[in-house]
Amino acid sequence: MTHILVLQWPGSTAADFVTLLETECALESGIGDTGIVDGHDFGSGQMNIFIGSEQPEDAFVAARRTLGDRLMWHQVRAAFRETRGETYTVLWPLGLTDFHVT
View 1 (cartoon, rainbow, N blue to C red):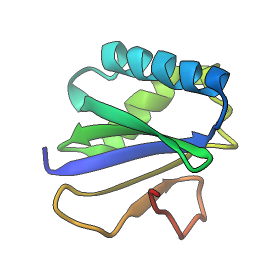
View 2 (cartoon, one colour):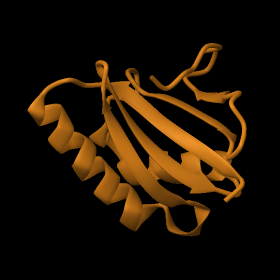
View 3 (tube, helix red, strand yellow):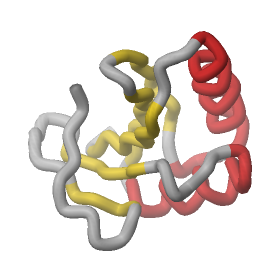
View 4 (cartoon, rainbow, N blue to C red):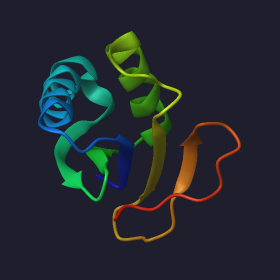
């Protein structure tokens, strides 16, 4: 895979972690050929799901379609970087300029 797409949103409770795992499962079966779910992390008040993809913009569209209203999209941030890179390109929300994974 040439890129890593990250879906990120706030979370810190056991219930949030369950939501993370359920969301990851939904993505694994729902994003099709646009990407491969490559794990998650949970901590520092945020949750991340990592998706490897050749076309991260398409993978994000597939993720949005797959997840629908499962997530509160006003809390979600999404960005991608080259697999060996460090600089993220933000996809969501529009206008966000700073993105990092802690």
